[in-house]
Image (cartoon, rainbow, N blue to C red):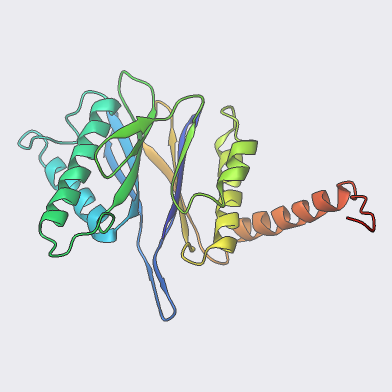
Length: 248
């Protein structure tokens, strides 16, 4: 299982992902799920991946292979004219991989090769944009009424995002909010695990970064996790008591 989050802010975009791909009793695997494509001064793009690992690696690998010599390769993620066109290309590539895998599988199942991606970035001459891309190749774009996307194990971390997100947040505030979302997910589902990768894109910088990895004993993550637990306990204690009678 996976948990990934990407968020739109006035200042740009922020992305966060766990690194766990398997959570068996004696077999825990980790892999980076944050992928970047950059042409300094012209475009910067980040992809988060969730789902079948073979599918996501094949799709990312195909995008990377076709971008190595963009003047000689078509389609290339470095030749699209807008982030919308980029999302369309990424969706088509993902669907191409999923379709090929299903064709060559002797006993295909509906979700055996399913994968979902989050794409965000900026191309010169336009604003930063954020997309959620489905295995069928279709996609939706983040707007003011849905300013962040989650993929993977989304249910445990969504409530805090929905309650506390503000588009005017700075990156430090947004990172703190996302880490609380991850902390709630880590406590509820063992298939999501540390380390957590974070990458920031500053609007109009056309340069991806800074990056940060939160390991198990990261002081900042531990302080946020413990502080959030204490805050919840104090908030709970301040709530009014219920009146319960004998016949209830």
